[in-house]
Length: 382
Image (cartoon, one colour):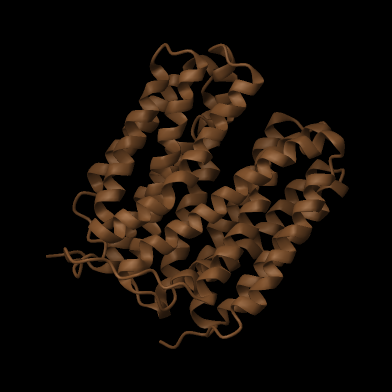
């Protein structure tokens, strides 16, 4: 008897949580690991960037392949590739070789995200889609919250084994995915329908870019900002965890709002909320306040992201869902990488500069969705 959409969602949520937990297990110490393998700061920067570059280069392609041949194949293949790539950290390579490892990890992680989110969109009608997507987003943040904490017990010398465990987790998740029904019963061998470009899709891509830019600043400068305020390592780790906790706790509420309230309004509030806090942080000089404000920011973010994701696929044909998700992931990742690349340089000139500049840019992009989404129905009828 085939699994119901709800059963499939539960299994997929577990797989997402396991994959993200494994993916973030060793990340806090990765730069030190690469340094021990002979990596200079510039080499380490290239290795870290290769993860995002590979994602940008492959996300839409993986979405196209998923729409053409099925999401389950992409999901399983991405987990297998990520698993074996993670295991290479045990090999006695010099640092530059790990650029290939990070590239394979970036490409496979991106493909996995595209397949998982488009599958959920296919399995649930639009009136329930926000709540379903919110559970996937919560699973991602759950992994982000506990992965680094588990990794505290791992030292740099044992990091290769931590990534090996990550690989095993990913391969185990692939095995659990082999019998998943990801809403592909009507896939045929015929040609794909054309991707329908409209204002709604463009607005969703603009929103993804605005959100990605803010994350890019945090990736490059958040730890530097707290370090400049003499934060301890524990405080820095705790700041990331405390951002994730409200997201995990409230994302289902955000999903309910996406299905019952005006998605456009909620999405816009969330985007402006991110820009506001981004501009505020460099002017706060208490580490306790920074951690607390991060949790407060996460409340509005968790309530709005299901609406942004739902607007991306609202009214779309089943066999264009993965391409839409691929475009959104590409826009978000590219903006993240671009913002991260420039933020580090700007931070050395003035710590407030990257936060302020990207906050203004993100808010400006968010404002344009008022035009892009002006004719989009914000409320979905059951």
